[in-house]
Image (cartoon, rainbow over the protein chains, first blue to last red):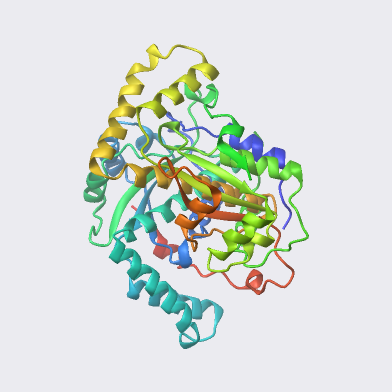
Length: 216
Length: 216
């Protein structure tokens, strides 16, 4: 693995901003999109359970409907790829076994040899369910994927905009989500900034590093 | 901005894994750490409110104590930089004004001209507080920073391990956190894998891309 330079990273992170206006004419090339798709798939999650699904909405009619329930923001319509992030609800034993079966499929070994790990996962999920924070815990994992996706995009020269200003219930309805198991958490359009998006050149508003990072 | 190649990204993301054993002798060079620190600072968050703090624990005694309340995992002791992610509780009007003041400081303009934006932020925070999901919402933002940090680290050739297997209450106590305003959410050791960490070569367990990503 050949690391990139620190300056390359800093340049990309400073170049990134929450894009308000995308250039509707520019599409992400297939090779670049494939890498971004893999940044979602390869994101880490608690116990490796991957409590998420990523819907890439391409249908213009659906996009229009989603824009209407996103405070009228136009990114869902104008971006190249519009990704909706779904979080899993009520994760449990079945999901644990599915994951362990997948592990055996890819790494070999036996499900029996993973019994200790299975017990730990199931106990953690049950404890969280009893404590009422199971879905909250899992929903946070989805934001790891969001962070990974936006960082990856910036490095590939692709613009994004994290979107929480949306009616999640209406998204579920429009997208035909099985809401017993899944729920919309957020969305992220990806593509290329319009030449006249004035936010592109606005200074980033961040607190001083010394206020955000402490050394103990 | 000169983007990196898709292959460079894919190589780094496949190289990344949840490092179980760090090489205690290897430290992250200052220039690389500085870029990683900035990846935390530059992370996006809802409304730009940055509801987080990042504690980099260097003191060996503190690290030992944290390891003991992290299921005995050794990464807090052996890594180069041990980052604890704190989430803000009870975000409100004061935080909104602090943010808008910072915006005026960096971008110019006046606080008065931002009144419309202020109203939207305050109303959203109050709605979330009334709905009982304010801290949950803000905690998710912290995981964007976690995702950005791990992705940035991988690209710089730095190993990490997302850690939620820890006693957050004990972390707060050991680190002397003002728990009225802040709470430990997770941690992330960073550094370099030990040569004998057997997990480094284990195949990644991910569901098929077609199971995780759908096109509509």
